[in-house]
Length: 239
Image (tube, rainbow, N blue to C red):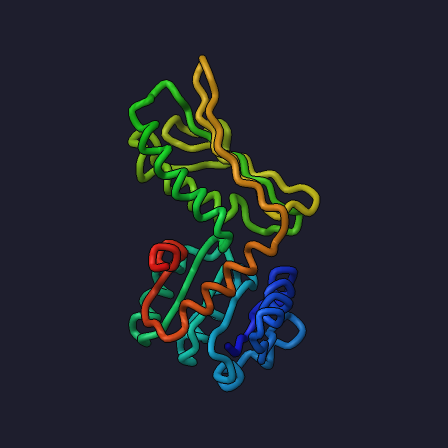
């Protein structure tokens, strides 16, 4: 598999190392030092592109890949207000796009557990619901994309919650998210159900970025030859 990497920060470098170890070829790396090389002609040298860039460039990066006819996997967060626009471009161009807020297999199993727990807690109105997410100090968006996905999973299954907020004084129908930025934490997410009598918590803690990189490469392998818009649930339930 010939891979183009878009974004050469820590995740981009982790993907490069793992991809080469797995026998794949990294044919293009696009980062902040060579923006002039990010062209349709150069993209077409790859079988698939993996984007871990920045929120303000993600939409352009993804749509350029689609228009080049190159399947694209993206894990960039903080740009999802344009997600529906990307879907429209992908459908119009008959392209292939795979998005996940988190590519860790463990996190995606955690997301499934989160939704099932929310179903069980829907009628337990004595419990309020809150969340804590902890990431490294270089993370630009808050709450994290994973936290937003988890919050949406709760809102879809708990009638008394219809929004999320970073503001602790938010309305009762909001899930309060405490976004902590400290050290070099790869990512920790804690979901908390609290009543006067007890507290129930579920937690996922990443030990390194390797799990994210492995998941992104698996998604790239899976996406080649497909048409449409996909996510981790599509991949995990097809295997």
